[in-house]
Image (cartoon, rainbow, N blue to C red; front, side):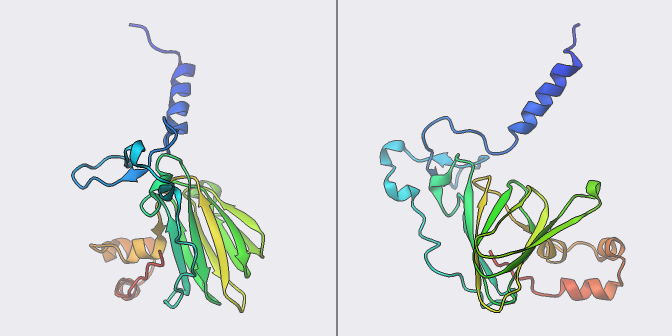
Length: 221
């Protein structure tokens, strides 16, 4: 029995990894429709003969998001669930409004890199590398017109350090990049993560864990 050369196996693995995220479309467009009876990895396509210009229009960025919440920020996503015309195109956007002192808390996008542009205000932004790179923090103060990139899957945040409201827009390299807000996931999971796990992981007393798990973890998305 003959075996493939190691070089070919490595090439095959690299190729599979390269196409592990949003695939390239096989037609001009595939406007998403929901079928509650069937679950697939993505969305079904609307009949192209029924597609109109409105399928490629998203009006959700016209007005500011409501920042009257504990975080002082509001994310308005334009992912495939809100914007069906994005289906199979491998891209999405989000509008992020900040009150003075508002925070878009530490979170990750497991399926997309994010490019952020500030259009109003001043933001302190940053991301943390993986354990492999010693959890190094890269941080910068951004002003109007500045652009910053957050690599796929890495924990990142944005904080309005100005005295006026701030506004930013993000582009993401997936039609459905996903969002995992760290505090919500760790302390607000349902059912809750065992206190024994969290006390050892964070090296804190159980009372601290109980307190954190009892909080209402607001989702600004």
